[in-house]
Length: 273
Image (cartoon, rainbow, N blue to C red):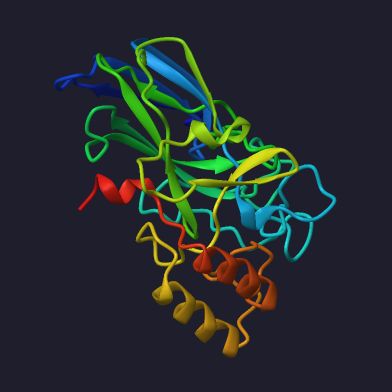
């Protein structure tokens, strides 16, 4: 009796204004693991780099991966399904030797219109590496449909302040590289807005503390965090665990309080109702 060993899926993306048609073919094994990917049309590989303030530890060059290996070498707190509602699944997320390697956490990457960043064109839930690189669940650079007009890249994390890139004039083919960590002005900022990133060891990072994902670190965030702190929550994947170590303690409170007192918020507030 023949045994089914491969599943082939064909996805056709039909162009809407500003987009280019693309057709993607995925070949998977019977367990649903992607083993081959082919495409026709215009897809862009995005090589983006971003750092999280909360995941940095004194004396370490890269971000910590405490959540991935919290219980043991192959068992942690990171969920297999992304926390942003994208239904992206990486079943081997607790294994640093898996195809995606060591992982800090899930992040959300959005492609937005350059002129009106309130218009979201595409989005993907992806994996953040300790170095700041962002990869797909197979460990490769994520792919987005090419655009016929300039775009911006927005990066969101479940408890850090979202950041927005400057306009990218060409986003229609090849590999696009954007490194937020090299300079403060890599994150778009309107006059009157606070600094969109901070600096540590010569690299720029996203502010930690926006636990309710409303683009600002305010009293509401502090109240939520204080409640979890008083309840002694640990061994969980928590929004209020801003330093990503598996529990809510005074360290999280200190990081959040510093950001709160400085009035940090995302420039995205200027564009999205």
